[in-house]
Length: 375
Image 1: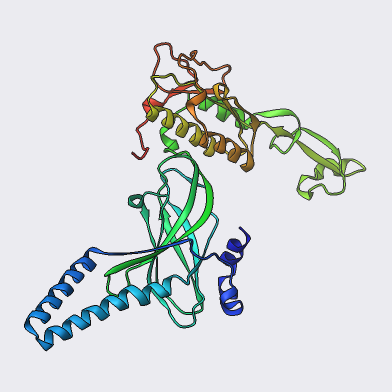
Image 2 (image 1 turned 90 degrees about the vertical axis):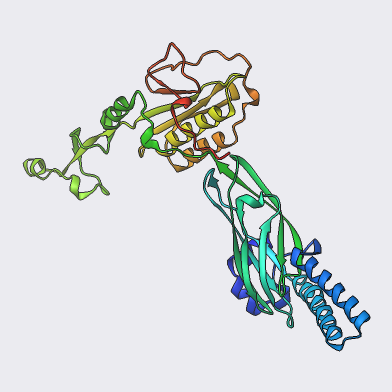
């Protein structure tokens, strides 16, 4: 939504220049209800009313009038202030399962008369026990303020948030006044990473060797490859000064291309008896191996039972593509009696779930790793 992003980037600018025309949306629903102290206060007020009528005591009449005035102030004036608030939600960022997702908002009070106090912002689509609401202590008249809510996603995959609630109990805590805003936002929750130091792959030594292996073609390695004529743009540090002094031209040293490490991550097909916990743990292992791979490592991701085959590449964009595939992976396409998965070559690492009797050197099992998945 364009108005959301504009307000998120320039709240102060619009605060001073646009006044009540600042971007943002108005509430779609409002509500008001008594709190537990409010019910007690109403009971005491009724008790005072009965006592004043029966006893004709001026002090009791005065206390009864004060109680009614407190209810009016708490219920009407506060509600009139909060209904004017406009709100814009900032875009959600991609996060990992087990990490905190920060949802940010900008609130604007276009009123020139009534400020707002003790505002609490929460997401109704997220379990309140797994979230820390945002708080704005004082929202002045004709001004904007930014607040943040910390959420704890409970599962990987697409996370959708639609309803934001702004509420207040100011001034006496007798009523809770709230207004709801309908703003659709979506983000991707990546799998939970595990400590890569605990993952020992059978072909780590092979991968380390391939990182330093040189190919028989020109590149940017460290070993000597050949000499050639200097061309404009060649780095001066590559000029072979001794050889150039013996010839009539400037010669440049060439070096062989260094071969990048190759790794194929393959996720075995889960059976109907595979616990969800082991399935999620295997995805976390695959995600960690991809995310924490050495620089320039060419990684391929293969999940043939779900139709996911991502060719071997390197780079940040490729890692993000593999991570997204793991984040949205579902076991709905798995068969009830899958064939046993084995590695195709020494660079293929198959991640299984429960240890089998005929293990292969290129397979690791999810059951060998402690569970960090939140329950």
